[in-house]
Image (cartoon, rainbow, N blue to C red; front, side):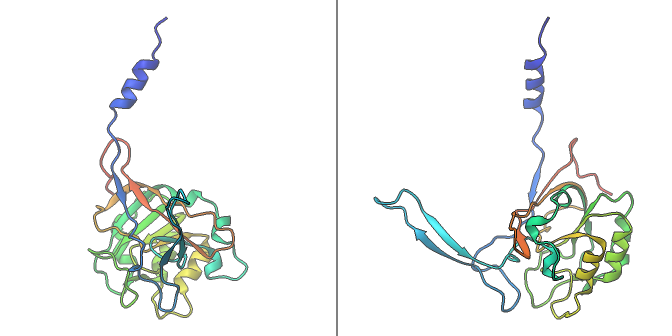
Length: 230
């Protein structure tokens, strides 16, 4: 009997690689953080030399630096730390929705065109160039999160520093995340990503006592090519 293993391997090798979009901003001393939060810093702890075989750095930075996942602990005392949350929301089918230049808040009408057959994860592109500035950025209106929650999503992401305005003290959109058990990604870079459907991979670190975690967020095109435009 002739084995089909070599043929299967050949077919696998011939399959084109799926395109990947890196949607994470650079993390270094220039990374923007909330005013007063810990800025990124780095120093050499062990130096490669005749007496030491490696370089090792010590890093100091807020867990909200760069692309990151907030934990429920961030906005609710006694809620889970990021290392305790389920990883499933951060991995799987998602939709990038363009609501470009929509103003200070993403309102329901800005996403209404892309809600049919919505996958469990939604990323909002609000500007032609992602904003990491805390001076002025677009947040998400509570009504928009309430609408998305009716679509049985598990995660929402945005290309700005926060789902709530920088001056907010009540954090209504964060509180809606808590109410509906939704996970969130902030500070994404979606500048080069067309509107459509993708696979999201953005796993947080297993920081068992932390209120957030940096992520290396990427989007991968769906098998078969294209982005599955809504």
